[in-house]
Structures are given as C-alpha cells and as structure tokens.
Length: 318
Ligand code: NAD
Ligand code: UDP
Image 1 (tube, helix red, strand yellow):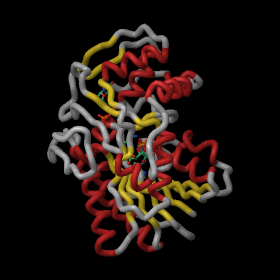
Image 2 (cartoon, helix red, strand yellow):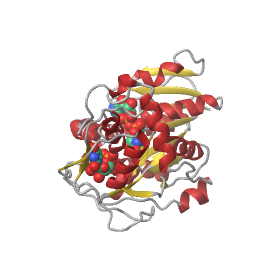
Image 3 (cartoon, protein in one colour):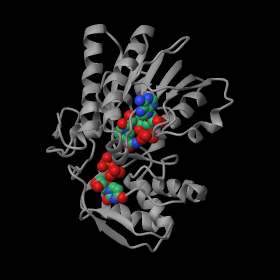
Image 4 (cartoon, helix red, strand yellow):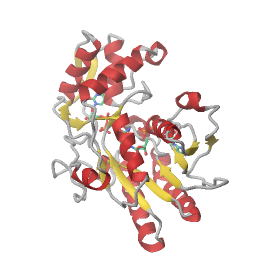
C-alpha cells in the first residue's frame, strides 16, 4: 500500500509511519509541524519508501502518485495545545478532514479517521461503549477539540453514505509512550518529567478523576487493523485499565524512584471525571486487544526519557 498520513510528524503519526514502513508499505507524511517535530522522523529521512511534505492540511491536500489509504491524524491533541490553537483545531477538524476525505475519494482509497474518546465529553455512561452519544459542552473551552472531532465523524459518515468512500473511524483513548513531547502538558509526560527533574507532580483537582491509558505500540496495531479492513466503525481503541490520577502519580514515582511530592492545582473547566473504553467491538471486528499493562508501558516511557536528558530540560507545561 501507499499510505498518506496527515499529522505523521506527531507522537502517534510517527509510530504509524514506522509500523507501515516496517511491513513494506510506502508512506507520504504530511504535517505542518505545529505540534509535531521532524526529530520524530529523523531516522526515516533516507528511507526509500518515505516522503515528507510540510503542509497545512486545512488549506488543501494534494499528493502526486498512487494513494491506497489516507490516515487522518492531523490535529492538536493535548489540551494545552488545542486550547492555545482553538481556531486552528476547528479548522483542521473541519476543512482539514474535508480535504483528507476528498483525497481519499479521488483515489478510491481507504480513509481512517483518528477520532477520540473526547466525543463522549463528560460521560454520563460508564464505561463508554460506541453506542453512547456523549455529553459535550458545545461552547466550553474543550469544545474546539471535541466538536471538531464530532464534526469529523459526521463528515466521514456522510461521505461513506452518500459517496461510498470507505471510511473507518477509531475513537482513541489516552495513549502514551516514547516520542511524546515533554512539553505537551498531558498528564503522563508532566508526571514523568516532573518526577525525573525532582519537581512536584501537579495533580489537578483532588486527583480522583480517572483515565485509561493505552501504550502506543498497542494503539498502532489497532490503527493498522482498521486500515486493513472495510469496517466503518466507530471502534473504541484504548486500554480499559482505569486509574485515578493519584494512582498514576504513585506509579510514576515508583517507576522513576523519585521522591517528588504531589502538588494539587485547580481542575481545568469541563475536565471529564472518568473515562474507560468498552473494547468489545474492537475485539469482534478487528481481533484487537491491548497487551501492554500500565506499569510496563510507563517503565518503557521512563526509560526513553532517561536516555534523552535534552528532552527533560525546561519545566513541564502545567
Ligand atoms: P500530536 O500533537 O503529537 O500530533 C498531531 C500532529 O498533527 C502534529 O505532528 C501536528 O504538527 C500535526 N498537525 C496539526 N494540525 C495540522 C495541520 N493543520 N496540517 C498538518 N498537520 C497538522 O498528537 P498525537 O497524540 O500524535 O495525536 C494524533 C491524532 O490522534 C490526533 O488527531 C488526536 O486527536 C488523536 N488522538 C490522540 C490521542 C492520544 O492520547 N495521543 C487520543 C485521542 C485521539
Ligand atoms: N492532569 C493532572 N496533572 C497534569 C496534567 C493533567 O492531574 O499535570 C489531569 C487532567 O486534569 C485530566 C487527566 O490528568 O484529569 C488527563 O489529562 P490529559 O491532559 O493527559 O488528557 P485528557 O484530559 O485529554 O484526557
């Protein structure tokens, strides 16, 4: 296959580039480097199957040559990133998705949408199955991300219904691992960099809110399975192992051997109190389930940061 990956210089996108190239596919990576970085792709620079195009997909998307699949991952993903870029986030979720879908349609290619557990908002149903329609504040600060992704899902579904485009929607739950940016402000990177730098771990609110964290290698296996089939989805991809943020802080302190204290900060507006995927559909349709537990995944992520002291310079984004 020759696969176009929008957002391929980011955390998840760069791992997807690696996985596709490893199995012999060609990759055209399109990224405006707004939250991603070339360092994530440095090792692919001379790979014969790899092409990098620096483009803003909200402005348009044209790719020369054959295209068998389009994986649309372009979008700021961490709350500080999308809160800093509210209009760009809405643009890439709407116009960007429209351009990526049009590219897939022109080439008769499979289209994969990286949607998110955020479409469930502050969930009134727990854990979250795909049948749940969500509880999103349409005008709150997080809505720029949540509603952009909900719109992307609507657009992909309409394309499939009216134009016959082969679309696959995955709803990704919190994913972590090597190549996350130390300054993306997500909880896993904040806790790891704070613990390794001997700074206090910033727990927002009381720390009883939960998330379910999936290791990146597991997630990428799920993306490949969705690319390779005709399943429309939506399919939840995530690890149902649910932890409170206080439990995560303790786990990171153990994994790093750090003696940093915990410091409570104000809880951001509309921060979902709990989140855990139901992954029955992923098992049935993709034969997918996660294999790497949180302790092991955090151990691998900590090892990656420890080997890159330059990543740890400067404070975490809080
Ligand atoms: P990331 O910020 O590391 O990667 C996003 C990439 O998209 C970056 O390389 C960025 O430069 C690029 N990008 C943003 N706007 C663009 C534009 N207009 N044109 C071209 N490129 C653009 O984030 P990530 O964690 O790798 O997330 C990738 C995708 O997965 C996103 O769509 C995100 O919403 C989704 N997702 C991620 C998670 C997670 O836990 N990591 C959870 C749910 C959904
Ligand atoms: N969080 C925290 N400390 C931090 C960063 C985040 O306690 O330094 C909390 C945040 O309030 C949320 C959870 O951790 O409840 C997950 O936050 P993240 O930004 O990683 O992802 P999302 O909110 O999108 O799930």
